Image (tube, rainbow, N blue to C red):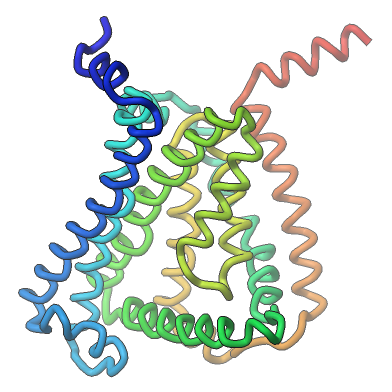
Length: 321
């Protein structure tokens, strides 16, 4: 039976008004939760609400990291989780559980293949990150490039503050805030809501995957990390497109973030020792091509196992030939 309230929304609110309402609620959710996060962080750390920006630049307060983590939690919930849970109902009159495929039963093999893909893509991500670092904007956009470099330094300072860990407990807290929460929050919104919405509207799964991956990378506002995050977004998008289970890209996203976190915890001097690279070495290129080969193989197996009908159709066509 159709919910009368859903009938009311469809009858009295056209699609364009529902989209406008959805966007408005998205901004309101982010603004409200961000303010609450600032208020809570200020109460816990003793840093004034207006003083966080200055503290980020100075990085002198020992409580700054705690405050930033509190703000991050509330911001992620307001920007991604709440909209992802509410917007499917407003636009499509469908609950998020059924809309995103949260209840779908997926075989353990699919999750194992997902983790393997998350591991195998790392050399490719590293090479695209190096390419991204050497991209230079045209001369007439030099001002924009300087602003992006300044924003990049600020983001690096934030991440350095986030990744300061002095024991297993802080590692556990960072796992929840840096690996678990972003994986769930961002995948619910980008793949579960945005990609699914685009797929419904433009009738093309691959186009929805690419557009969502672009927005996913762009919204992080890290120009020098755009390409590797875009590549990762494509993997996340196809994992969701082929499996239909939002838990699969969440696991891939978590695996990627958790690997970076482990590297920062167990080998904190690795990046400082290696420093920024100016060129590729032979081993990197070999690993990159090997990564592409293994990833393509895993993706093929993943697609066939996640969509058995594809394999049945292939076998049927083969028998007919």
